[in-house]
Image 1 (cartoon, chains in turn orange, cyan, yellow, green):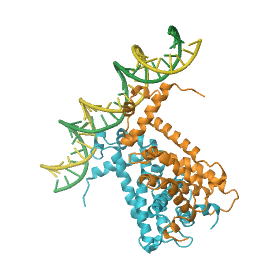
Image 2 (image 1 turned 180 degrees about the vertical axis):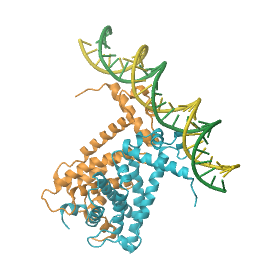
Image 3 (image 1 turned 120 degrees about the vertical axis):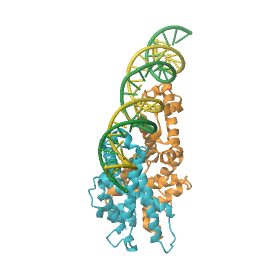
Image 4 (image 1 turned 30 degrees about the horizontal axis):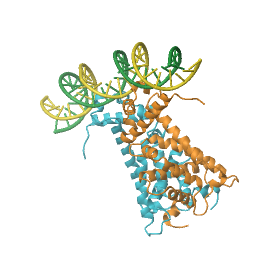
Length: 198
Length: 198
DNA sequence: TATTTAAACTACATAATGTAGTTTATACTT
DNA sequence: AAGTATAAACTACATTATGTAGTTTAAATA
């Protein structure tokens, strides 16, 4: 355990929070160190004692949230992976629930003035997770019809695509509803879902 | 028809090409107007006669390519939309083929130092296209199992996700192979594809 | 050939950055 | 509570990119 000087904690907290607010206001690119330190009411020179530049600050902010995400979404038992009839799996529920609980952060990152890199970073994180999940599910090795990596990227992109859409439309649907739709699409495929067949 | 002064044409061509190269080398964010004009061997002041700033230049570069994409992918007949047995639809083929034909551009944009915004812009373009395509396909209004907009975003994200993966792995597979995998996933869904069922 | 227009060149004012040295305030230790 | 350590503020400065204005040179068009 390392006890961090409370002055340091306070400074970093101020900087991070001012930073996220500014992203929402004018977008990452337009932000200067001047802006951040001004809004945080921290001397500009002090910024450099904590972060190299705004990219460093962004990196650390993103990393925090994604680690948090994985911890919250990871299944506790094998049960959590399996969808019951008419009920999506616990993992899907947790995923949408987590995004909902941190909606201010996610809305900022995905929004109008958001940080496009965040989506990329989140993809990498989710890909890792989906990959492990598929391994878990297919203990008995059936013949796959499509290479695993292709499935991983397909599923990940589709999931994050739905989350993005959900955020863009101000989260009108409930987390549970979104989880259900995603589960259905993955089970019967989008073509059958569109045609009402199956 | 507007005839553009050849000097203007040359200048813009130089700037755009230097710009794309630089994106590949050091990433969009790190690029300065100085860099671009230096590499293009154009006076820095002249840059401002053509573009407001590097964002303006990026915008125009992206817009060009995406309009080009839609024109090349759009189906010529209703036939082109339908997948024959074991053969993906012509639209899917055209999509992967187009990316392949412009692989230098796409590889740069999606790559290590790429422009994350490009993916977002491409998504919007493809969403529009998928939306129209679904309307075409479901002339007879069946009962959809999932709202149309959700399907649109699911399909778009999944398709671009596969393209991204394909690019990241240096396009080892052929355009036709990728089109086939995508077609299959959309037909039977990723779960059946993973389990080998269906 | 004369005229128009683009690009180069020169110069400058402004703003952000990154770093160094010094002072003040806050936290920790004995 | 007093003394020490350390963080943050403050001041100053050198460097770099930006954007704009005015002038000269070169190229395209009529």
